[in-house]
Amino acid sequence: MANEPVRDTDPTLGKLVIDAQRDISTLISKEIQLAKSELKVSVKHGGVGVGLFAGAAFLGLLAVIMLSVAIAYLIHWNGQGLDLHWAFLIVFAVYLLLAGLLALIGVKQVKKVKAPERAIEQGRQIPQALKGRG
Image (cartoon, rainbow, N blue to C red; front, side, top):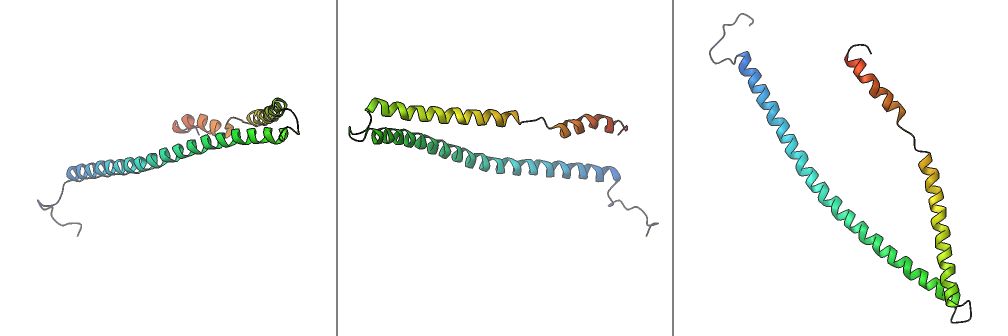
């Protein structure tokens, strides 16, 4: 089998390399097309999702405003409780305290953020490994 004569129909090494390059190029372009089509669908769904979240956030904000007015009128209690301006100031102060508390917690969380030290160190080692010094 190893000593069979080469026939004219047998592909040459150059032809095989050219065919392999063409096939790889076609495969890569098809994979890119597939990825693009999948991304288009994902981006569309993501955009719709973001829009729906924005609508929900807006309606949530309106609900908080209505709740604030309701709480203020509850404190006022048809003139039996505090005056209306004091009731609204109390609601305002509660929201201000909540905002301050959330900001304080947020600052503490941000201070806990650290750089990805292991990834940075590994990134520094890549050039040395490529040069054969790793």
